[in-house]
Length: 304
Image 1 (cartoon, rainbow, N blue to C red):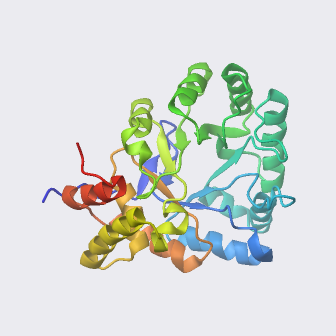
Image 2 (image 1 turned 90 degrees about the horizontal axis):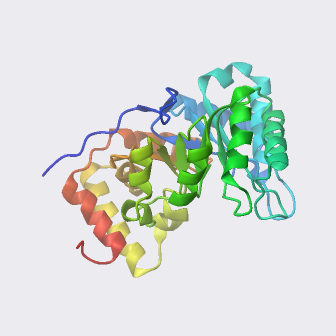
């Protein structure tokens, strides 16, 4: 069987020269349940101790439909304020461009205010990666690019990324940017495989973008999906997991890590042991036969 290369422990974030861990930790549920700053700090330390230095949040994390906008950033800001040295140990990413109750807003005025508000909540002078969370169809990419380039020039953000953008939207924004995109963040998992065949990852490789995979465990369905397709994928992941002595979730993370685009799975767990377990996926090596077996199960039909 043809073994695929082991993923590196670290990668470059696009062409930026910024070194990030090959697995990230996401904080969309950080502010849930009244978590204290001390408890949040323990999770940050758990991620860093596991070798995960790439931390991803967003201004809308914590929003429950009526309140909580900015809560996750604010909680992380408390952690950074209490332990300023932590900031230098992490590559900090956040996102903006969604403003409840509006769907999306990337007007120049709002983008400028969103970036400044995130920095204030995070209690930092700059973030390493700022991403447009979802595309605003009413925003001209040239105007968006101008605001983001200005933010880089002002030292507020180091690099620029997008999340949930189509290939055409990525190409249009990148065309107008002086500081080119370094990352794209689509949903990718063994249960969400569109990007493997629709050109998303091919474009990322062509443009040198680092793909960040949100919901790499299929929104929890990999833990126990109900459909025939879900069960088929789970069976293949379990077969490989049993052979390698790893958990199903580690198999799912490592399956993404084996792709040549350099996918970085974002661990969504807010449990220290699950973060550390996820980081162990970097030591798992796949072969082509097993990798394609998962893909075929996810497709629900044989490859052409």
